[in-house]
Image (cartoon, rainbow, N blue to C red; front, top):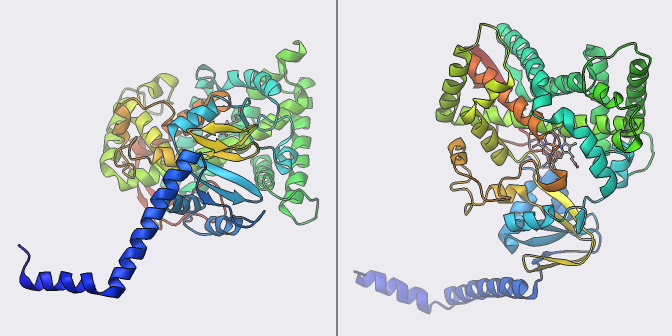
Length: 484
Ligand code: HEM
């Protein structure tokens, strides 16, 4: 029952002209927003703010990228303002953020036909014109077919053993030291070393560190202004690329002279030397793609490793359940015996932890494409030349697809996912080439971490690193290990 005072209060508010005016304005704004959204949908026009020619919202994007909330904050805000579909203008180009599994499907299934990766000159210059990331449709199909075999599950069984060996030794040493270490630094180094070992059997520490430094310079130059001015990121990247190509050429020559022939990715490419031209890669194709593989594989896998530990630390139930599974696998092995593919196949909860880590961390936030002609996506009009970004983060956090999306819950993967709603590795002709390698690396890592140790996270700071397109903790997630 409303009391007398309550009625008087309501009447007072109702007749107060200021409050009434404010209420009317709020209702007007709300109605006009809803009307605008409906109208946009009917017209096929995507809502959004394009701002000034060329500049658009570039400064807001750069400011988000330069903050500890990360560049996705820019997207999050615009979705609040304009709705799920929105457009913006960045660096002179119109960008549409595609938020749905249906939209993702339409783009992935028309990759190379209606959409393509936008070609950026600096990217081609840095990673090489023959890289999978830059070549034409025809060449992409051929190069990808020839690169794929060493990345199949069966070919990676040697990689599993070697990675496990490297990891077990390094973790043991860190535990013995008893000191806190930055997990991200550790994961960056071990993914780099294990990939270089798998690709070219490189083991020498000083060579590895020089190549790692140069790969980072190349990666930094991929989205820079392409002017050869000393001191710029582009300049440093091109110089680093030249050094890397020199190094790769030297290794290939030594192999051709028969001075060394270890069993690795490079050797499997060179064994095709006498094959017809469409059945082999030429030297520049091999070298550009060696560089591409390292750059595409290191930071992504290393960031995912770091997030898996952070999420498990915050979700002890999941950590204990994973530990139980890993200990049961360990119990059936000899002391010190290395993992093999069959062991990894038994890690059913482990695989769900990997999936949930990738869903929540969104190591690659969105996948950029350019529309090759005018078209429609889910009733929205897309113009030729517009950039359409498949927003994997939005899809992975969609509460209609994932219940309580911000909760780390590996068991949600007991159920089969709706098509194109779980896309951490993309889909279609450009699906991640290293998908198996990434999953195996993470499984081995989780096995050794939970089966052999407990850890404490020594800095709980949730802030993200600035100026990076891959979300990573600013602290790098320092941890201390303790043997079980
Ligand atoms: C957790 C780790 C990883 C994640 C989340 C990841 C994610 C992705 C995604 C989403 C794409 C497709 C991008 C697009 O459609 O625009 C991609 C492509 C690619 N990835 Fe990965 N990746 C990972 C690890 C690796 C590793 C370990 C390697 C290599 C050893 C690798 C090599 C590649 C290559 C070469 C491409 C380009 C494929 C093409 O264009 O045909 N990735 N990755």
